[in-house]
Length: 117
Image (tube, rainbow, N blue to C red):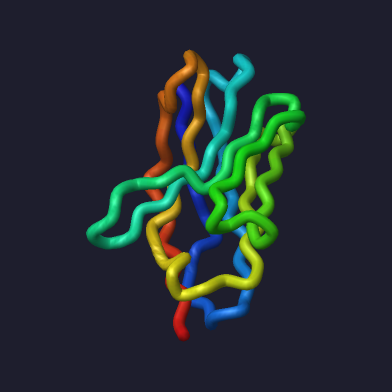
């Protein structure tokens, strides 16, 4: 089992920045892909970004390319999502997730990000 805890959400004005953190604990010895998803009210959950264990492979949704950056520090069992130039449409609950077996096996509880116009 892997436990994930997000932090860093909050209220920010459009154009501002936030940095989300994800702390992993438990059976973190295995390599895993880390991802960030978000879900806005009335919308489906969508993958925002993900990164392989080595960091060599990353994915970004088109809507956040050039504005968001995913990173990880495996020595600390941490992952991050740096969000710049935030827009009101980025408002959502953001979830950290980990894939050990090829699917998104573990999820955090989510952190609210609200961007005011």
